[in-house]
Structure formats: structure tokens, C-alpha cells
Length: 156
Image (cartoon, rainbow, N blue to C red; front, side, top):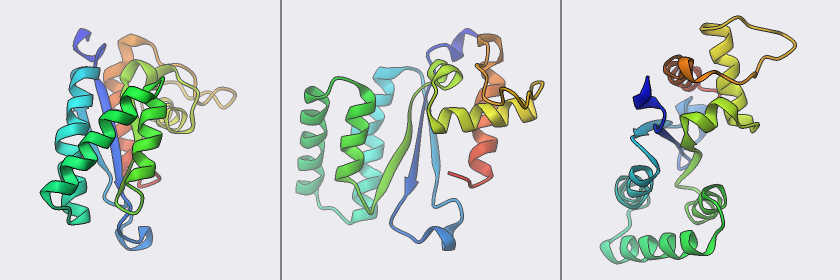
């Protein structure tokens, strides 16, 4: 189980198409082995996906990468940084989750709570009084499966 302690998930959605046509809107999930790898993903693969979606040339990709770095340096949290990145990538893609499995198990935000509710429905003892209860560390593997299930339901 220890390999999941530092696992980070990045979930991003294609905004360039109408959601009613695509259903899940091109939702993609990427697992990283930690925060550093997740940040590298944003500057590498995620930016390449944006470039492809937005038909950006090399100069625009370079400028976007530099802007992402400036924003990261100017913000106080990953959440704030991703919010600013999403503002720059409007009508292309947006990130709905950028964080650790530990945060997903505990944070009280809409996305994490929705994933935990799926976890409790599918893998735990569902409690109507607390459908988004925290998920213990020894169940994080199942929480990651609940994330996949949640995304499969196309409710993002």
C-alpha cells in the first residue's frame, strides 16, 4: 500500500467540444508518483495536449510554459496555481483535480467528496448520514478504483 501514499492524480477535461456530444467530455486521468512528477506532467504532457487541442505553434507553447511557471511562482498553493492555469486554458481543457490520493481521501471539496461517495457505495459500508466520510489509508487502492468508476459515470 505504501506506493499509494505519494500518488497524485491529475484529471482534466476537454472543453473544446460540446459536453452533450462527447458525454465524458474527453476526461483523462493521469497518475503520478508524487507532486514533482505531477508538476512535470503539467509542463510536459499536459502542455502538449493543450498545444494539440489549440493548434499552438512552438512559440505559443514556449510562451505558455513560461506563463505557467510565472503563475506557479506567484501563487501560494497548488490549488490557486491550477485555478490560474485553467483561466489561461479556457475553451481548451481544464483540470478538475490536481492532488494526492491522501487529499482525495480527506479534503472537503466537491470533486473529492463525489469520489469518496462512489468509494463508499462500491467498496465500503455506505452511510446515508455521512456519504463522503474520510477514507482510511489502507483503502486508498480502492479509492483510486472509485475515482476511475466516478469518471466512467461521466458526471464530471
